[in-house]
Length: 467
Length: 84
Image 1: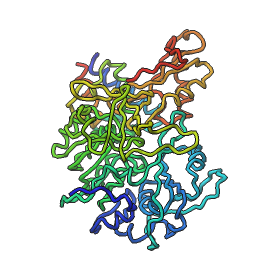
Image 2: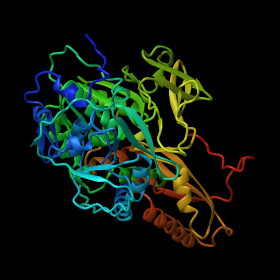
Image 3: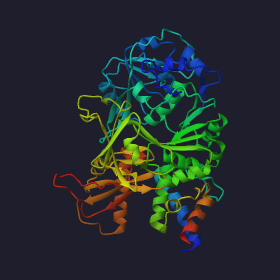
Image 4: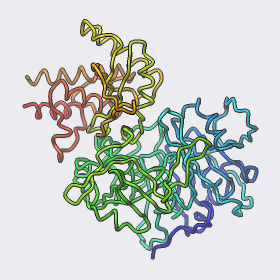
């Protein structure tokens, strides 16, 4: 029998009702917490009640403490704002302001925010403290996830537990023990899906750690008997480069967050012949749309018409999705519109029909996906254009078999082409250097090409070629 | 291109990309596991892109069913076979 998540239950209540939790834990690299302890105690030093009705920013140094804080806060806080690991500190005041944050949960000891807003600070711990306070559900908590915007300022995406968990089937009668894991960080949509799968069904979960090598993580996942594991195609490519890939024996492998090409699907099939391999289409905004189980890149055209609970259509070549799993809106006064009047979310992913199968061919907005991390060309172009010798630039994607894509830049110089290749090389280095200072490493162009001109449309905008 | 120059081209790209990305590169022996080399996925992506420019081949893309190389020696062999 399959049941949908109880829309009125909180994460804590779902976990509490998930049956026998004995032997089930959230495993981090340095610590672990039994699920039964999470139900009985508090990682917020029993201070959860103080956070009742507040807009709570969760920003911790590791996924492990975030996971326990989320389980405790859902149903109590009015709003949970989930901070991804790489959010630049300079954007925190914007996030706090936009989400009207009035409480912070963190395991950091010092915090310089420069925020004028009065904030409650609630520490969280890796240890469970006794704190069995009243867990009556006070709020249907709003979950705010952050995604990168075109200028580097994050966009705040509004979900509820119901929309986040909409694709999760509960009450599976399978007697097989399930142990979840993910290469993703649970502070992002893809990883959060796996945390919710584990918490709502009362299963163990093995989390990655930033300080752990891929080989060590695989060994640890193997030692906990991981059966279900998810990651981006790039994370899987990296895992398969490790001899420790033999240490896990998954029954279910899920790919999402990037286009799954045939090569990685074939490699996983031959490496883990006993595993069910699925590639899913999901995004923070559009939610989980569908899962492809036939081991072939792209998806059958019939998926558009025949996916239960999810309406899909293709308009102007891009995939649009309407379901109870999409986010409701972006937060903020000047925020862009997330859904059209008909309730569809435009994913911006361009698809093309070839022989009865849709394939992803690129992004309308030119966004580049480097190993699952989004790069908006405009943000990189703005940095390149700061260079005094640069007239204009176009940042575009270059296909890559390791990370799916790399960032490269076409640059028009103010003065005519340089005299010597030595000068040219020095200038390329110079431009890369200013990018390195201002941008995360995956956003820095892997190559700079000097071009005589760039195509500009009549609108005055540069013409971006999807690919 | 001779086998020796494929190896030296690869070694020089490993060294250069590690320096550019500020990663500490382990000594390049044939038995060195790639994931223990000090390079991350982004480094490998850049190395593969540059080797495509320098050697004219990208064996990662051209051989769909092959397993990934796991050691530096296998990586070199992967490219040597593709450039033969």
